[in-house]
Length: 201
Image (cartoon, rainbow, N blue to C red):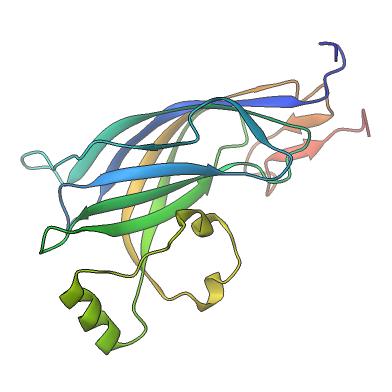
């Protein structure tokens, strides 16, 4: 492989999970992981992480983490573009750690600095009895694998409730995409934010 005729392109991601807005809850922490297609592979950085516990400041409703993100991917095509899945946890009335929200978003397609807000949600019990039993046992419904949040299978039969927001900041750099015939465009001009040029097709 020569630099003039690359076989892969690179996507470099750094930034941070900045803050969250959960008006009803405090003392929360978050976990993150990346979900990506079969043609993608991480070359450096961390695929998952867990933050510190943060509390609301005096007179503030925001929970600030400023938890760093840093990872580089390589791929031969944009299909399966990486998503980041964020899960937020905190104590319930009995002091047990329970999920307070799940959310996912695609890594921005265009190079530069981006700020994104993810609406979060939690699974709900399907009946009042299950809801009461979950509260009594201190076990709220949650996904065994948070990565299902970034996938479509089975989501249509999952009952969920919106709850809170998480804000992320990304700095995106791409390398060799144009040499492979891909050109990043405005995210508003295409659903993927990518177009295939006539060269190399």
